[in-house]
Each structure stands twice: as C-alpha cells, then as structure tokens.
Length: 251
Image 1 (cartoon, rainbow, N blue to C red):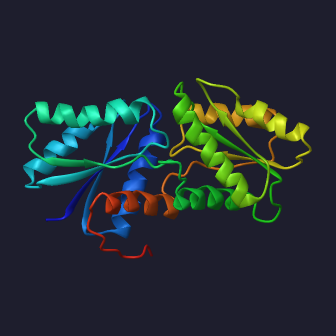
Image 2 (image 1 turned 90 degrees about the vertical axis):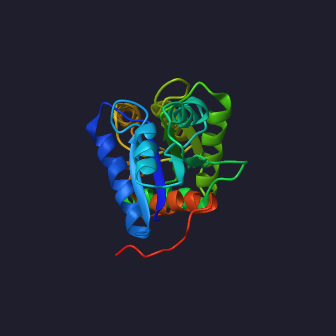
C-alpha cells in the first residue's frame, strides 16, 4: 500500500492559491512516486481534509500522514487542522493519522530547506545586484508566539544573506511591509528586497507587495509555491513522521 499523505492548505477565494497548492502536491509526488499525495483545504476550496482521510480509508489505507501547509503554528495549525482529524473520526473514519509539524520554525529551529527556498526565490529576482537589506513579509497573525517564529525566520535569512533584516505583515499586526522597507532605508540600505513568506499568492500577498512597492522596494520575490526546496521540506516532514523514504530526483 502506498504511503498516504494529506497536504492541508488554508484555502482562499483566490484561484491562484489552489493552483499553487496543487502544484506543490505534484512536486512532492514527483520526488516520491511511491506516495499517494493529495491536497486539501480548510476553507473556500474542496476537498476538505476529512474528505481526503475518508477516501484513503475507503481505499484500504490504515494510516495517513497529514502535513499542514502553514508557516506558523497559529490558530489554523493549533485548532483547525487537528479539528479535521476529530471530525473525520466523528464521521466514522477509522484511520490512524499522524499530524506533522508546520513548515515554519519549530522548537526554535528554522528549517534549512525553508531558508533554501526563500534564498532561491530572492536569487531569481536579484541575480546580479544583491540586496543590502531584506524584509520577510508574512500574512500576519494575532498570535505573539507565531509572530516570534516569523522573526526567527527573518533573522536566519538576514544572517544567511549577511544583511540587515525586518519582519513585516500584511494584516493583524504591525509593521506593514512598506514601513519595514522605510525603516531599512532610514538605516542606509539602498537596495531592499521583499521576500515573500507565503506559500501561495492571494489578496494578502498582493496587499503586502503593493505596500512595499509604494515604499520603493528594489525587488519582490514570488511565494514559495512548488519550489524544489519547499517540496523537499514537505517530504522531510512526512519522513520525520515515519513515512517511507523512497526517493526519485525531480527531472
């Protein structure tokens, strides 16, 4: 029986988000063709995670690994994702489910693969003229502990690049990305890069990009979507949770 893997995205009314999630599922399947990898959504799109779990149980699987496609362990990671497992069991799904950590920092450690993906995205838009300051911009959350992990990621990225850094948010908490760009400019940075701490594009990403552009940001990266580093990070979460690790390099 193939390893059953459920990827759980937040979901969005913006169709670009679902396309990005499906592309990531394809990328993970390409790396591990022995896995049955399916995308699911907490809101706005289908299937829901509980529906995917039910389909796995109907196919004869006894165990599934669920990976939250989230960069912080805020409300959705702490409540909504486990709630889908509870709901599936309430609906009669008899399947062992292993829930992995989110894709962002955990236990005070920033995954190297996450930094690889963020740095690779920056390299795509700034190959010749490196930035001298970086703003890591996230969707935003009211959770102080979740924001602390964004700060950890921003600090680790700044350290890797050897430049000053700031964290910024599209909503729920200051600063906005434009304010963070201006703060670095006030410190003497002349070529500030906005690095998108997003897994997929959407309205919040559009908003934070617009704020940075108004402040005169030099370059803006795309969300991580299906980058090789992100697919590898998802796969590592599955393997850490006890998934079988057969591997075929992506073409």
